[in-house]
Image 1: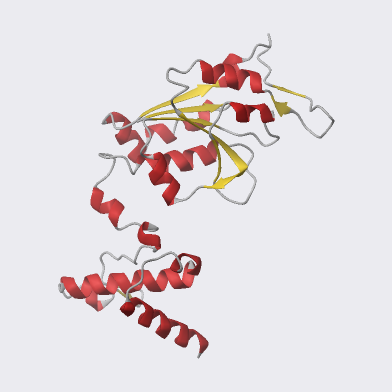
Image 2: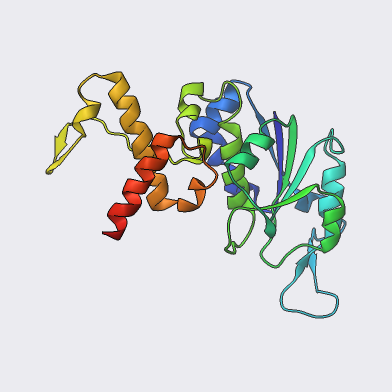
Length: 242
């Protein structure tokens, strides 16, 4: 996969592309990430990229010109999936990450706190938000999306790690533990130490179900529940009311 990120602050990405899973994915050729400073495409002699707002308003607005010029200069721009980070966009989630992981080329335009000339929407395919809050720019949002997408690409991490993660099948991931068995009065559940893999599998499933019910009950309605799952949920609901 090829990912181009358009930003006014390319220095923010230096640690991101040179650390952890992202770094290894780049080194293995799983993904090619390019960070582009679209200020370089400004037609202003001082490389200015913003100006006052037509109709009045506080602050300055990013011009469509340098971003459009930058987009058009990217090889394969027309066929790429073009995204802009924006608080008005659809909320990013795991399903969207999986969808975008199927793309060959993604271009992400980092939004800006005072906004971008609305004509930018003529050059992009989709607006995406990472949550109902305001950031000073789209750089953090773009990193979150890229991290989520890249780890789904074949060869980035093991398939087993992905299969057990939260939000697969609309369920949160079960609790996990490591040594020591006992610490500060808190013990690892015995079922996880007895070597019975069927019991471990069952415990993990119901722990996942309980965590989802407690922390993200909104996901339960979308999950595929067995008769046994529904009976277990009924028990949790009864305990909650008692």
